[in-house]
Length: 284
Image: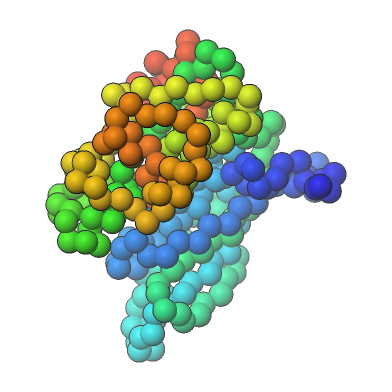
């Protein structure tokens, strides 16, 4: 049971809290480093966290950072924190948000968390609202979890990793701005994988969702690695959580792949889907 001024709960991408006439969207994300470059990882982590606000049609306003650094010298701490703050500030400022505080500590592994607040004008987008006959748009390829798992095992190709990192480090604010006015429901595809996030949308909206595997975009190298049995550590839990069937053990396996800074999944009228898809492709 939620208080009357909280109008959406943890089932959606962010909690919605009404304070007077203002509707706030609040969310938090924490990632253990998927890459050991502090500048690049901070940029990706900020985009990953912002996805919750963007997918709800919210305007990012404030951010609190929680930085955990591995044990290192004071001089190296200064260098890492400078790079982390520069990268996070660039992405957050570009999105309209300001860093208003945070906390730094040391731990076993490098990680970065962001607690974000945004404001919503009009009706927020949630997991509810998808309609029978809607088309689905996915704005980014799948396979980042598989590629990161392969990289840790020394089995990934350098060019594939470089292309994926460049995509993950690119803001999706422009994609969200194009989709939000037209979407009936929208979410960002992250830890639960495409199948998990689609299933949550289907349950919330009271519909079923059919995914044509041949139409699902994949990062270069991801399909071959999946065929070789490479899986993220979260893959098995994601698969067991979804009640559905897949027609391919290779491409189908990537539906359960957890994504970092994943794309948006939007349900919208098929009459506008083709034009929006072309616009999004023009944006990259």
